[in-house]
Image (cartoon, rainbow, N blue to C red):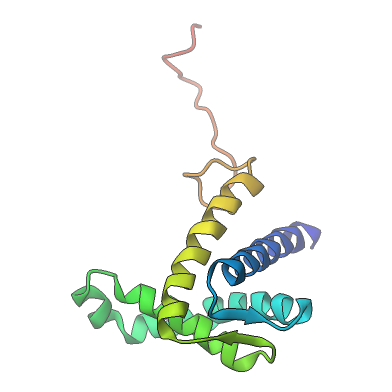
Length: 141
């Protein structure tokens, strides 16, 4: 069970750090206190895991038509949804949420690269380690 809890806590901490940084970069994002920040990060993770896939499926034709750029709008809507649900978390408008969602995604990705240095970037999480085959032409026999 601890094997599943640690990656969850790490992802939650990365999201919290990214939201905190976004609140300092964008004037339109405010957190009343630390509790609002932590709850917002948790709720954003749940919204991205549950609501976002449903929106992606429902708007798939529009996403194809815009060559995937509509996904940025969906990310902004997830931030606005969380700000509407969490007391103490405010976003001034759609465009602030739009650019902040891009900032949060890039920063979370960058921090995630350094946080989990055991897994190569190209390897999907949870798929195990790469196994070296018995025949390796680069290694002398």
